[in-house]
Image 1 (cartoon, rainbow, N blue to C red):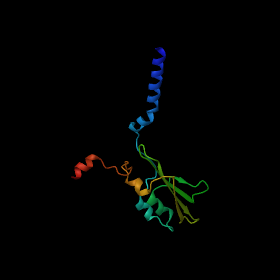
Image 2: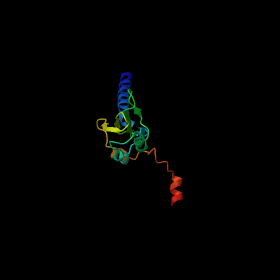
Image 3: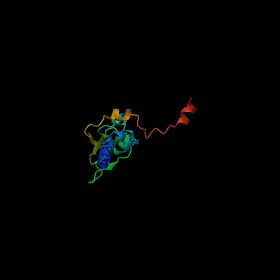
Image 4: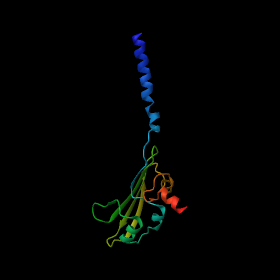
Length: 139
């Protein structure tokens, strides 16, 4: 009789513990945006031949710069929505000796969403500081 209770308890425990992966979807996880918030409009304004000041005006300050000088700036936009796949886009902007953009390269993590898809998600926009009170006052 004691053996049956122990066996039943062991089976129930193993079923419950294996079910934790199903329960994980119910657990709240915040949306996480990291790095430079990049929009398609900003990327469309970037052009070869622009100065560093123009790039800062369009994109903001870079997240990283090259270790071997100030000739490469990196803008990283990383997004992790609650239980979805992490998406990341990295924009590398190369400057010549005179501080003029000579090349722009884009890289992404495998299975990352496009920049448009990342911006269209219902993730909180770090630039949009409008509150519900602002909506009420404009109506």
